[in-house]
Length: 438
Ligand code: 5CA
Image (tube, rainbow, N blue to C red; front, side):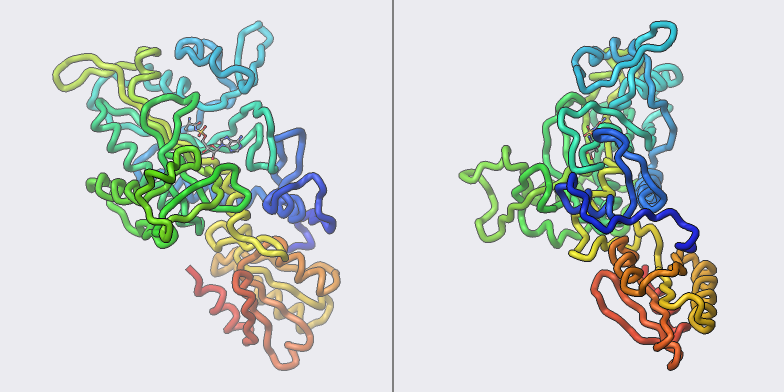
């Protein structure tokens, strides 16, 4: 992408309304724009990151065996009346009426909708296990939307729903999602700590929320310092018994502050850490809560007809954009992990119009496209300082800076955003350097 032809409305001033780093930086980097309270447009740079994150989530869901579908944002009230949640959900649910006076709603979650799909088609245990997921916008009329897209009213969620014949099968489905979450977040450079949690309006009797550590998190967390060195499962065979893995992770202490009892804590003061955390995922096992209410039954091998056992598994995809920034930024701007960066490499032409600089940049740019490094070429007619500051602000992991002075010795400067290290190398060595990252 050529920056001269891109839409990157960066802000010079720090927006006053933003209280936390990620919100400030997303506005300054031209990633999002507020439409109304808790509702945002995603501008080109923000949309790229949102898509990168969605794709990692999608890949790890598929690896775990879940199948992608797409359910609507607008749902009929009837299915929520069947489950009994239509009234319970209260003012958080955005209710709308269509031209025929039919009650509809903008989905805050999709247990009812997916249960309706299931009961229309599945009758036998032979079709199980089944896990259906989608990545879709949700609406919750939060009392206090805040921190930009972190607690929005409209937000993008990955929600998966598992169906099994019995509690045993459901536990296996739960374990698969548990493990796939650790992998998903590790790929984004995040250590996500699973914590036993309350089930709230989703219901059920087993639940874990996944928390990343950040000063601006909404909840306090107590945890064993081993979490900071946890080995997050590079390779996992989903067909194997995952219970030992899950048990191992659950056995490392982690509790929300309201559940932490200092007098009965198994962890010594020396090993215990406390920080604030951001909830980026939440998984639930709720058995037959929805299937019994909505008549989603299957016949077992013995011919007996029973309500199917279900769980649901959410990831805050749009919240993750802010969460990653909270976990990875400095006073100059965002520091994207390579896996979710909007562009892999920035090629900064310090002097557009200078023949050698132009030619070197064009060659680097086309070579980087060739190697799929997803380059951004800063070919704007701007002050060098402003260009370098913009690249730091938007957090591109590698920068190749091409200027007339370096060109006299046929060298460019390569900078690693994360460490601030710089290397003076030839353009071809620069290509090698930036392509050698995983
Ligand atoms: N049906 C279940 C699981 S699919 C469910 O809705 N779970 S949830 O309520 O915990 O939401 C799942 C994830 O969505 C949360 O972990 C959080 O990361 C994200 N999320 C929830 N509310 C918001 C919000 N207002 N703004 C941004 N992200 C949110």
